Image 1 (tube, rainbow, N blue to C red):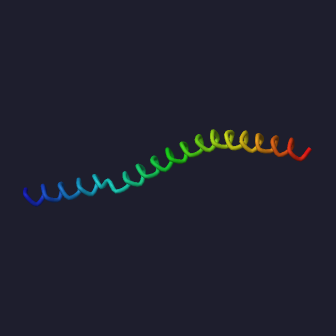
Image 2: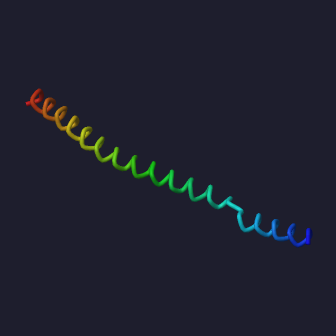
Image 3: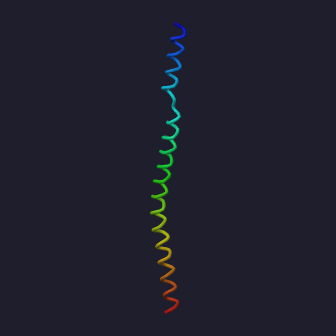
Length: 64
Protein backbone atom coordinates (compact mmCIF):
# COMPACT_ATOMS: atom_id res chain seq x y z
CA UNK A 1 0.00 0.00 0.00
CA UNK A 2 2.78 2.41 0.92
CA UNK A 3 4.58 1.73 -2.35
CA UNK A 4 1.41 2.42 -4.34
CA UNK A 5 0.92 5.73 -2.54
CA UNK A 6 4.54 6.65 -3.19
CA UNK A 7 4.13 5.91 -6.90
CA UNK A 8 0.95 7.98 -6.99
CA UNK A 9 2.69 10.87 -5.24
CA UNK A 10 5.63 10.78 -7.66
CA UNK A 11 3.36 10.65 -10.70
CA UNK A 12 1.37 13.63 -9.40
CA UNK A 13 4.58 15.59 -8.88
CA UNK A 14 5.56 14.94 -12.49
CA UNK A 15 2.14 16.08 -13.73
CA UNK A 16 2.34 19.17 -11.52
CA UNK A 17 5.63 20.26 -13.06
CA UNK A 18 5.22 24.02 -13.55
CA UNK A 19 8.45 24.96 -15.26
CA UNK A 20 6.52 25.90 -18.41
CA UNK A 21 4.53 28.42 -16.42
CA UNK A 22 7.63 30.58 -15.99
CA UNK A 23 8.08 30.76 -19.75
CA UNK A 24 4.49 31.91 -20.21
CA UNK A 25 4.89 34.57 -17.53
CA UNK A 26 8.08 35.87 -19.14
CA UNK A 27 6.36 35.97 -22.53
CA UNK A 28 3.47 37.98 -21.08
CA UNK A 29 5.82 40.44 -19.42
CA UNK A 30 7.81 40.88 -22.64
CA UNK A 31 4.57 41.39 -24.56
CA UNK A 32 3.40 44.08 -22.14
CA UNK A 33 6.76 45.84 -22.31
CA UNK A 34 6.66 45.76 -26.11
CA UNK A 35 3.14 47.15 -26.12
CA UNK A 36 4.10 49.96 -23.74
CA UNK A 37 7.22 50.77 -25.73
CA UNK A 38 5.23 50.92 -28.96
CA UNK A 39 2.63 53.24 -27.45
CA UNK A 40 5.36 55.41 -25.96
CA UNK A 41 7.28 55.59 -29.22
CA UNK A 42 4.19 56.75 -31.11
CA UNK A 43 3.69 59.61 -28.67
CA UNK A 44 7.38 60.44 -28.61
CA UNK A 45 7.61 60.37 -32.40
CA UNK A 46 4.89 63.02 -32.69
CA UNK A 47 6.64 65.25 -30.17
CA UNK A 48 10.01 64.88 -31.85
CA UNK A 49 8.44 65.48 -35.27
CA UNK A 50 6.87 68.74 -34.16
CA UNK A 51 10.14 69.86 -32.54
CA UNK A 52 12.05 69.24 -35.76
CA UNK A 53 9.35 71.07 -37.73
CA UNK A 54 9.70 74.10 -35.42
CA UNK A 55 13.49 74.06 -35.78
CA UNK A 56 13.14 73.75 -39.56
CA UNK A 57 10.76 76.69 -39.67
CA UNK A 58 13.13 78.87 -37.64
CA UNK A 59 16.11 77.87 -39.77
CA UNK A 60 14.09 78.57 -42.89
CA UNK A 61 13.21 82.05 -41.67
CA UNK A 62 16.86 82.82 -40.83
CA UNK A 63 18.18 81.71 -44.20
CA UNK A 64 15.54 83.54 -46.26
